Image (cartoon, rainbow, N blue to C red; front, side, top):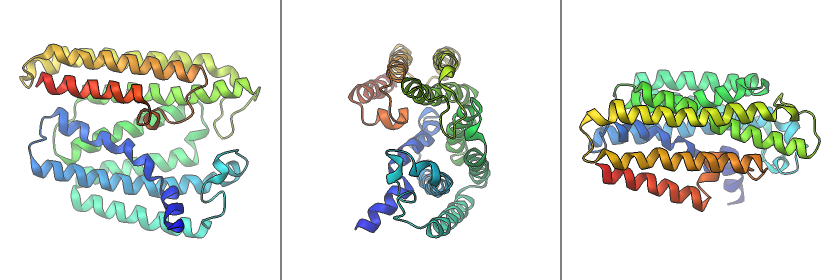
Length: 293
């Protein structure tokens, strides 16, 4: 059982929740009554989770030296030597190969986007993560590619509104995480954040870019509601949908307040799944969407 628990940590199963956004195109295209499309989306979700676990192993192996010096990350399976590097490399190779094989059996367009996702993930792990601002943009693109995969696997048209919203929204969240790290570094008088390339005096930049990106995503959503959702005919009462950008705005402000106060200690997406206020706002979004139908 302990061995299973260790490998569970290495695969970062708790991070799979980030891949739920693959189902967003299925919902917004209103194809959730089509069992074949639901099955395709579920298989795509499982495949992306599998691939992500393989890349997490690669990332942790690359970070071993830095993690062993970190007060909490030194407990990670590879940093703590509970799993050997050789075992990790072998497992990552098998997992990534299996996920790619599964992707091609599900859908070739989906597999093509997954390959792009894998390439960018590896490029991020080896190079981009140490380039200030480029790193957060790469993270935003990786999240947006999940949306792209969700549409590709169920064969629906890509929505430029949704992709634009996703890029701005997740850029804001990635910057919020970095901003929190920079604020902690400033409090500890550390000049450089290890393997990130930021210095503590960069906090006005991450704050400005991040808040603006978040607000831009809300403007995009409002334009989508007026120009695409309204004339689509899918909604009986469109007014309920305007609760959604309001709730998301409140959540973005909360995330940035916590980041600036040095109280955001994890990925905003993972934080949201454990935070009562975030869950309440998420429930409000779901309820507003359902009532509008």
